[in-house]
Image (cartoon, rainbow, N blue to C red; front, side):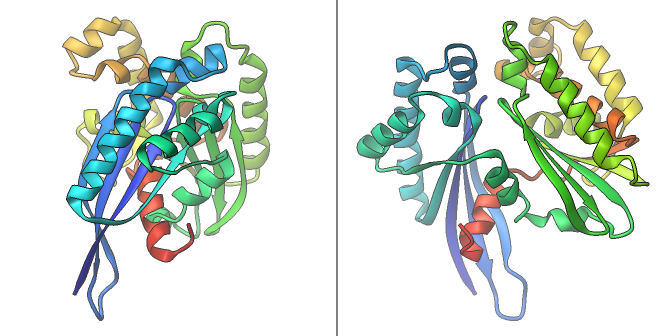
Length: 296
């Protein structure tokens, strides 16, 4: 038996995560991936990029501190391979590449700025196929802080995919002109799902994982459109403070969870899907598996 530790750093629009996994290989058995440690720090890069178009000096310093801390943690854990990926907030910031270079110079952590299609491809290297029946159709929806990725599966194959600049942090900014993008998103989903039957949604992202956990459903059990709609209205009735004090949500989750549910609900409605599956997979999991399969 061989056990190695791999690490993935996911630099999103709402938070930054470090996932450390044990990769266990035993002759005659499939490779298993077991989470050893997950650290999440609430650095909201999207609040800078989607309003000012630039990563602030304060958040740059916080990122450098976070990468230094992550580097130390990887050393302590004995990580043999790692990859750091940054998504829409850092990619769209006018100083994103410059910040990535400074982080490399000061922490020795190399950050790759990836686009929506690359992000979706990495996520698909997870066990997503375990959730797909070949005789059914699925709309995969990954909601991030700055963008949402959609992929349509039918008969076990990818039919189409597209990334839209609508995300939870972006939706919190009142001056964002997002109505045309909502319309474009609706048109795309309706056009690409109109001939497909037995449609379900597969949701990924921190917010849908939290909603599923709050529901008390067992892992693998889907949430219905009716339940999602009821949750949306229930959460909207509560103030930001009440969502923290009464529901125990983290401060950086309590505001973005509402725009997140709105995106999932819209996708379900436009795709005529009655339920959403929540496999609890994400970019970090995909990075670990990509490192192992040498596709990254």
